[in-house]
Length: 424
Image 1: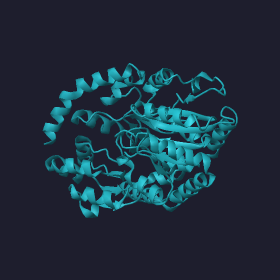
Image 2: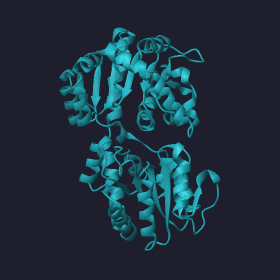
Image 3: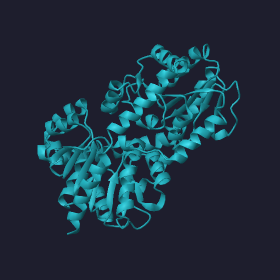
Image 4: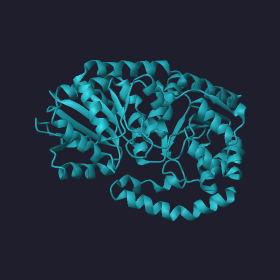
């Protein structure tokens, strides 16, 4: 089965490269560093690494505290971080800079994977969340590289699909040393697709362990006091195509009763910055971009955050936040960063990728779920008019974060046991 999978993947590579070219029209970074995707590197890699893979921005942000724990406690251990997307790569380079090696994860073709593993010779492989690659896992197994899937989650939909491919999935699972699941439901779904019960444990969700530096919070407060002074700031974060129009229409409706309202939009993908700006102008809204450095005027309707890596700061600068990827069936994005920055949180109905987090937030009255434009306008109005509602959301959000911390400690101990075992 893996041979057939490899043949199909190999056949698809020209189409994958064409897609990279197409995406590079708006995001030039997709045209760069293709050699890394084939296991070829400009600089000589350092071997014997502790290897972390985080597919994109969300996974990278989640794993940074764990990586920093290793850097603080075991600075002699060389660390490699791989990503798949340019946006994830940019976050690794911005946050970890030259303290780690960083390359793109190569394509899951046998000889490409062999070249990658031969170059870096990982002592331990740590894969974030849901990245299951048959050839990569197979070659980690035959090279006796301990492989850990951490912060692991598996939706019922994905589990149903995997159950249809036992000849591919069962061998893949056999090469995993341990699966550290986010929840009991995730653990049970991994067992249902073929993992051994003793191979799976529940360590909690690493995303609850985030800490936003005081300097980032202060930068947000300074932005609120200067550029956003006198405005009631509604941040729409990590938005996707199909969401902005709904949010802009909600803004127009709200503006009639909240004259000091200003909308801050932070699209999820940088290649969409120009499209969102055009959408604002078509709607006859006054828009300025963050990179323009123009000051906000009383008549400014939309402040377009056309930068990357500043979302936590923007959460600290807003009065209420809507987290995108949830009005359309994307699966949602992380709402915990907004909570950690003391922002009242709203999100839409599509939160499949953050089901556990969304459920805990709603059960503890730490967020408001808005299924349509009308619900959004009502929720924003309530937060604006009722300070007790705003403070309740903030305080309940803090409680949710505090009650669910601890995953980093568990994962660090789990991984250090494997690393120390390798050293003997």
